[in-house]
Structure formats: structure tokens, C-alpha cells
Length: 77
Image (tube, rainbow, N blue to C red):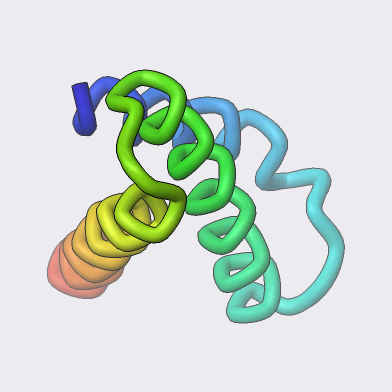
């Protein structure tokens, strides 16, 4: 469920990414914060846990996916 939620929110993010203003780092941080908040809301609704736990799980998932994505980009470029 976590992977499906992460893939869905990031799919939406990447569809609007070219229209976002600002430098790459600013867009990346703002986008990851927005995705973390949306995913935390989904996790809270789906699993009936606390808001704190939902934000923690979402932040961990997004940190991991961001690090993997940045490393993959660096290795493949």
C-alpha cells in the first residue's frame, strides 16, 4: 500500500513538474514536502493511525525514494 501511494503521488508530481517555477533544488524540496503531506493524509485515512505516525512513515518513504532517485540519476548520467 505504501509503494502504491508513493507511486501515485509521484506520478502526479512528475506530470506537473515542468510547470513548477524556481530552481531545481527549491522545486524538489517543495514538491517532496507537498507529496509527504498528501501521502500522510492518505496513510492516516487508510490505516487509522496517528497523524504523527502517518507523517513519519510518509517522510521516511519519501526520503528513501528521493535518495534512490538522485543516486540513480547521478549513476546513469
